[in-house]
Amino acid sequence: MKKLFDFFYDEINFKEVFKDPKRLIGYSFIVFFLAIFGIGLVYLNQIDQFYRNETPYDEPDPAKLFKDVELTLGRKVEGVKVELIKQPTEEMLKRGEEIYKTTCSTCHGEKGQGDGIAGKGLNPPPRNFAEKDGWKNGRSITQVYKTLQEGIPGSGMVAYEYLSPSEKIALYHIIKKFGTDFPDITDKDVAELDATYKVTQTYDIPPTIPIGTAVQKIVSENDTLSKVSANIVKLLNDPEIKNYVSDPELFAGFLLKVSGKGSDLENLLVSNYPLNGVSAKFIKSNSVEKKRFIEKLLSYKF
Ligand code: HEC
Image (cartoon, protein in one colour):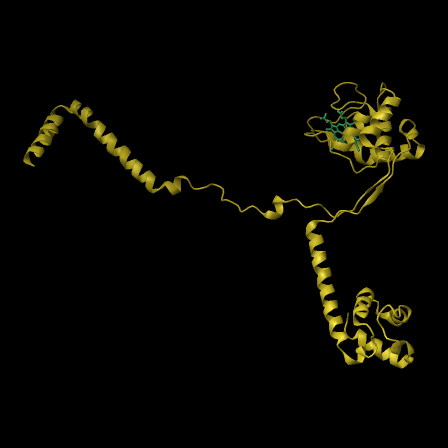
């Protein structure tokens, strides 16, 4: 032990060190080592603090992960007569002009020179229809139709796919007039437009219902349905009703069908006899008895 102490004493001879401070440099690595070791300990101890998330982790909202369709009414899209693609009717042109004024001129300008108020500051700027060069999709009727159908991604030009084929074709003719050297529509152009966008075909766009709403509707319908069926089961066990029923199964089916048509019930009971399971006794009964039977039925709210 003493030996070890002497060893250190010799090695770390502080008197010598103070006499010659340059020797300190030799020991400085110990200081560094200790310092780094100390910082390391603090670091490990506080690692949570160093790596604390700046933005707290958000549980993703499942409703946002899955985008449901919107509730839309179905509609019919009328096809355009093929000869009207080259030569639209006055009515079509008027409609095109109307749409241009209300929807397009804010950006493209009243005369189509790309100088509308809403277009100021847009980058890229709205197309000047009088200029021949620089068109992204191009100036043929199919190309402009594509622009209207899909928009120009990454620009202020959004898609106007909701416009009917007839409206889009009319808009092409409006734009064409703003330029002086638009190419004429050839038969090939017409064929290409129809092949790509089926503009001459009339078709139905079916209505869409969001899945959430549909499920709710089914659930609520089944809910009323099960209530109605439960009430029908109850009324079939009522002696006053049994009295006038010859076939309970047929009668139950009939009631399900006429559920909610209370005011017309007498008529329906008589006119559907005997397929509705009502007995001949009911048919032969007088009006007071009939009325009592129907009131009894309706008291079950089927
Ligand atoms: C909000 C402003 C805005 C409105 C409204 C707007 N556009 Fe545009 N449109 C633009 C911009 C911006 C461009 C240029 C896009 C580009 O060059 O990337 C453009 C480009 C176009 C082009 C040229 C596409 C090509 O090939 O380069 C056509 C054709 C066009 N618009 C038609 C219309 C019609 C028709 C309407 C109305 C139904 C309309 N735009 C409404 C902003 C608008």
